[in-house]
Length: 79
Image (cartoon, rainbow, N blue to C red; front, side, top):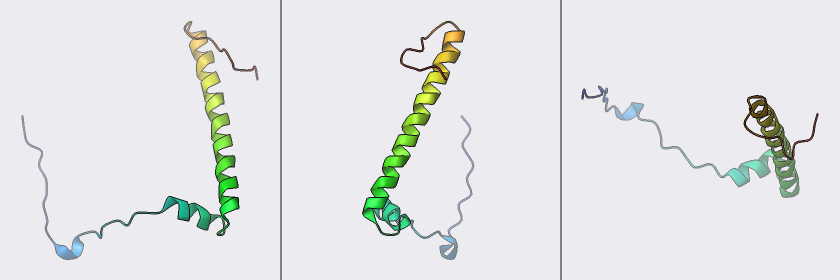
């Protein structure tokens, strides 16, 4: 099996600095102006939106599968 060719350049001034780990909780709170209650409110709203999007996608995929003759659309309300 042929070996993968790689270019190895050891130049200290070109070496990237190690990435610092981002504190996601602190980032979300900071994005909400430092208000932790607003941060939780935003996260819950995002979760609700994503839950709706997953439900819609699931129903659409079920309808496509039903049209192909395999799955049912149980639990999906008609739009």
